[in-house]
Length: 114
Length: 112
Image 1 (cartoon, each protein chain N blue to C red):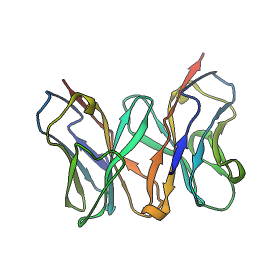
Image 2: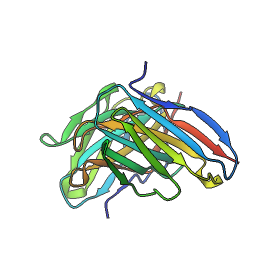
Image 3: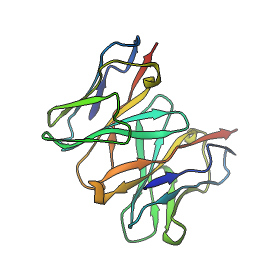
Image 4: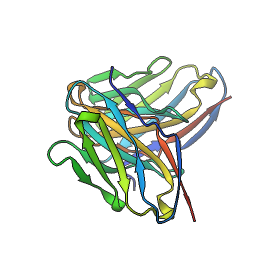
């Protein structure tokens, strides 16, 4: 069965430090991959997406993610975290052979220390 | 105005009551979805619709029903609410297979 795993439930980083959020997926074909961010009391906003081509994708707010087929991973990175990045982050896989519905990971909550 | 609008934004109800959450969109998308968010579980798909005549169950459809009244409107109903349906509910839309989802701001439902 298809699934998405985000191993880290909660991460705390210092402002200015680098960030990597992990995401692993299980899917029998090349996936469409997404990272969404949810600020408190808000809906989900798309950070970036991978459909094909270059495995390093750039997103909004200085985020990037790298698709590694051999590891079934799509980790999210940011070189320098800002206090406003504190939020919950969701990785998702799009099942194009099932009409494109998205399956989400459990989420990683990011806290930023001053 | 938001592209995907959910009403109500907050609702407190009692066990056994019927509840309807409504979603409307101005994006012109054919595909609409209802997800439920619970802490530690992420978002789980309840129902989805690829057009007005197409309704599909998601992974957790038991206890829920939906209605696609028009391309722009997709409602989620709880016929007899129970406390473990307390959650944050999101409506979303998309226009292509595998495309990104556009989310509403969520409807927080509490069942006492």
